[in-house]
Length: 341
Image 1 (cartoon, rainbow, N blue to C red):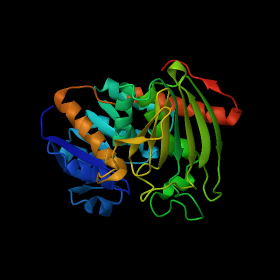
Image 2: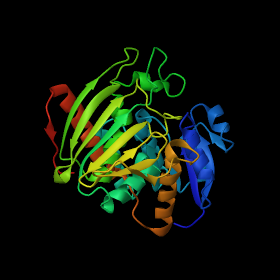
Image 3: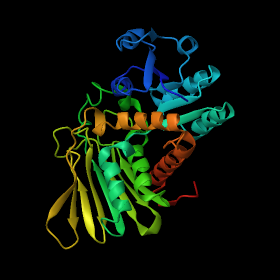
Image 4: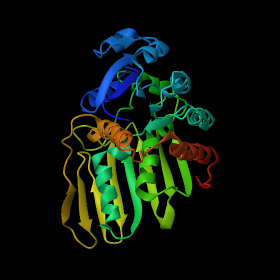
């Protein structure tokens, strides 16, 4: 594939603003159209606007289709795109509505010679890239445990989520399916695929259908454990609670690295009280350290240079398998061992 790469988008809801802004800032991309069932929202992007996906794909023939829609629309949209001959698709997470549905559309894509990349962007946040580099360099010695405390503070009261993403309220599976999957993937990126999981989930806000708080314990290779401690009703110390959405602690035999709500990372060596800045506070524009842009730039770079792209859908199936195990653990009260990917 050569530049410029033609990109079209389907979806013009709240989060799509970050996608459109990123595409327009990548020199190798020509953003050609927007599609949304409410065509006024597509028109508001300033691009050629459509409310019929098949018509848009036929008229603009994009190299890449960016699917910025909720899971309920993923499978149908992917099928329409494959029928139109689109060979590269980027699809928002959570990917599809179930493991079976995800496997089905991946098989269709493979048969069509197409590639689906899941837009799982948290591993592209600059603090996690820096944390991975520190791990690879052995900065904390032998890692033993990683904790993330999700505290966005946006889930209280009868109006929770209505202003930004109201469909959150009606999701029967919420905290894990919509939110914690970010850290399932990020923990995999940092520590490798987990070998077992245990989960204790609950609903705190009675105004929503799904769970919004809970603990998930992961057993990773080499005896490393990770804990996701999530509660969308509580907050953390930050001027922007959606930047990191919480705080993290990576602990090893030779030191500890702390992630603060401003996106900074601080290293304290074992036995010391002094802290050294590993990653300065976030100064990026855009959501979550501009992780949407980092992911989209990574995809374009991979397409142009024919280098491996992270989070292709076949690999991302592991995240969905782990998610299913988490819900099974929560319903049975048992720790579950995970089979091979």
